[in-house]
Length: 292
Image 1 (cartoon, rainbow, N blue to C red):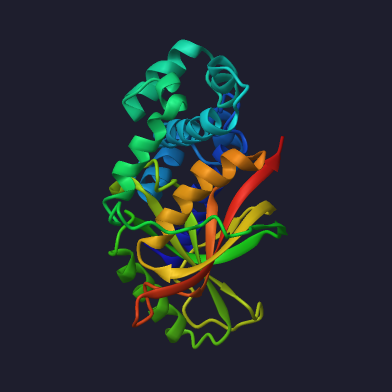
Image 2 (image 1 turned 45 degrees about the vertical axis):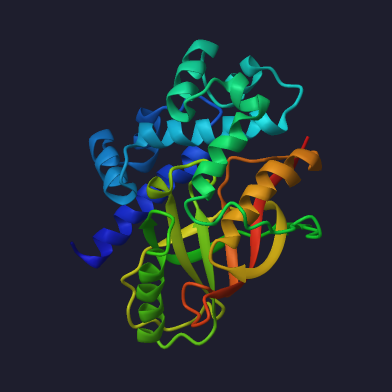
């Protein structure tokens, strides 16, 4: 595939994903989207599947259910019908069926504490459940973040194999002799409630010098949307990040009075444990929020 064709297809797929996040609480019409992007519906589905490894409807369903899972915990006064409507479901019956199929329990069971058991089973695959980290002293700052354009490589799965993807991205950096850059990770899927092998993890690089003359433009770009975020700073080792994300969603968020938005969370690395010899990290984790 020609380089220009690959970049064009990647842009289309990312535009579709951004559209899904933006309109996840509505009846998303793929016909309208294909007209807007000037791509036939057939090619739209094929391009998206090639890029993300699953079809558009599967992604819409997954994002809706992740949003619903969070709202069931944080929206103490919303009924299940309210949450079904807030996540784009036309009926409570279809929502109940989809939720139980995904999480193996009803929304009521999830809201009553079932989410803890479900999440713990996933997190325990990465860290020992006996390892307790005290996150209570972490005071997040609320920040308004600009739109971020970045070069990226997409990785399927959330485990130590992510290192290979970062090594490829580092090779691209060296090839282009890039001196000033930031390393980020975008979480299209929430790793504490998504089977780890199904998680979409995206390794990204933003250039500090926007006029950088790149010799190798083989990587596509995507844009992280601007917004209001809660910023959590942490240093540690492999396994601590997913524990932080679990604490953020299941403790801090519940007590904060905020809700998450449909936009994905992301990480900015100051020291990347996938590339550092001591496997330790220093990072900022950004959770998209809104006040309710």
